Length: 301
Image (cartoon, rainbow, N blue to C red; front, side, top):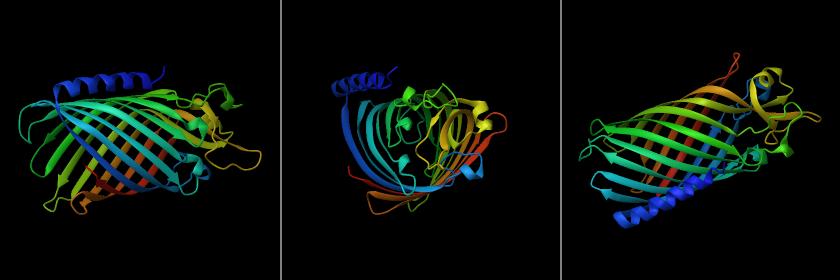
């Protein structure tokens, strides 16, 4: 299945309908983010754990179409570039296209809203076996509780398809090398508080029932016993005559995130964030990853 075909057909249909039915507003923004991950390899053993910093540049834009007084269609896209300080095999470029339809149950800022979305992302990695497409279906609920408090929750289902994990990247440890051919489901909840100076504090929780790609020096019997797929991973260095292997593991992941955003001028903001991943695989194989981020965003339109 080619995951890009459904989204292109869907976006063309949405665009044609929106132009015929609605008033529209365009939006564009650019962002620069610096991240530090303390377990970017998602490894179990301390000898396989790698930390690194990366810089991410993204340009985003789209069109908001007011279909009726309570219905809004948003078409959006973004182009992102990710560069790592130490492990340049993790460098990547991504293209995201999508659409969401929102319905408000009433008028005014306090009316609850439900939205459904479809998005497609192409991840082009400098390590070929990591290049993949993903298609996500999402459903979300949002309610402003007061001038300061805002609540949202939702669920998503994601399809992933590896594009370069064919026979050329097979591992001698297993014939199944499609490390990015999997599906996963997630749910999330978020609570935001906006202060009088327009800075905001956001706390969120996500639960993902799906898969994690974990990299480790082979042979690793513990991971081999529970892996659904594996392939040689050139993103991380290996000792002579040894090999780093990427293992796809069925996992249940908990993600806790806290973000503090401060306005900088009229059209810009600076956001400091911290997140922690707790990843649970089978047979007691567990991972953690802590991320610290700093993001600057400027609205162009």
